[in-house]
Length: 229
Image (cartoon, rainbow, N blue to C red; front, side):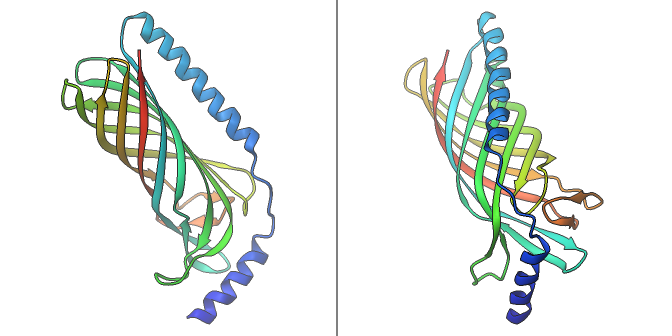
């Protein structure tokens, strides 16, 4: 089995030889557009005397894997390397317990061939993931300490070195956490999210041939400083 895996990795590198530089300009533009739309929305909400919370976030993602059904090599398991992520969350207060939420998360990581539970993954190249979501957040307490649940949906931009152009797929997320406010304007937020990017088995994907009936899933835990106004 190990011998087959070694052969597969060598052939895989030859088969996916069209390697390119990841476009940082595209990601910067994507972040700028997201931030601009959020700032416009925040100014509108603030003008209506509704509370706005901005939370820069540092996080860690884990447990990311999926399978592809490649024409030449059959069913192949792929892993997204665990690692640091960064993001920005904006919450707009609608009522005492309900907020509208905009959520952006970006990760610069690597794609690996799954060679077994005890074996390190074989690197296949860099991978960028960008999530842009909108949704709702329910606060379970109106006091200084606010546990919450959140449900979001949007898109995931997937940009792999071993493929051609980046791909955009629909995604959904669910999570929860806690907010602790030290003053009316400053607080701390800790949260966990489960993100699912929907990969259609009937569509071609430039990164890795055809997907099987599988989805890209990620767990994310993070903390951030809340700035409220």
